[in-house]
Amino acid sequence: MVNPLEHIRLHPKVAKQLIGLTLPQLEQLIKQAIAKNKERKKAAEDHKIRVNKKGAGRAKNLSEEAEICLTFFYLRQMPIFEVLGIMFDVSRTTANDLFHYWLPILRDLLPCSLLEEWQNSIKNDEFVQELLTSYELLIDSAEQQRERPKNYQEPKKFFSGKKQKHTFKNQFVSLPKGRDIVDVIVGERGPEADVNLLRKQQDNFSESQNFKGDKAYIGANRTITPQKKPPKRELTLEQKESNKLISQSRIYVEHLIRLIKIFRVAAERFRLHSRSYKQVILVICGLVRFRIGALKF
Image (cartoon, rainbow, N blue to C red):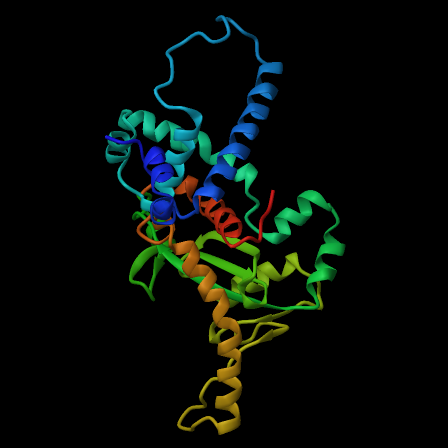
């Protein structure tokens, strides 16, 4: 069987279908991830008390490039680890271990939002917040089904009446036209009201920051929303036209969420342990930012 990485290099046009990135983007990320891994290893080696000789132990079956490709392949296609191991010619356990090894490295490499990227580089929250006030930021949320919690009380907390399933809720803030993910909240309870999440998220922004959302955000401060139809009455033509304009401008945040859901691990029932949910979704947010050109190295 041909290794998926070799297949992608032989047929670059299928790269987006298989891993959600173009071949040049994949090669660039592989290079950056390998460099980040070397940094982590060097930092660990400096504090390690060595017992065995360096380089001892079983030799690896896969190159680092193939290991990173395995991680991207899982995020995009979400096969069971048995199938993933067969595709990359490793055991199910090794496939699982490799995925969880590279996931935190990618998390360090890929800032999930513009706020996180700027805060890591500029380290001046007030300056960052002031820059964003010239925009009306778009906001929307999405739910994702999760495994039914085993704890007796947990199912009640995560059961969504809207979806009739146990779900996580994620909320995304984007620039106009969906040019970048500005901020994200991940792994909240499915029944949590969108407007309550926005009120929490507004703490990350200036008090003069304006937002634009759908009817779920009616009542939030500094937030433009469509008008609801009054009971037993109709909206006026002006109100309908205003709602239409709002919908046309905020549809781009839904397009951004669609890009996130291209990665099946973010769209279908989340099968991994719930404690890894936040890390997985934030990595995907970083991948989407890199895919659309908002994140550069």
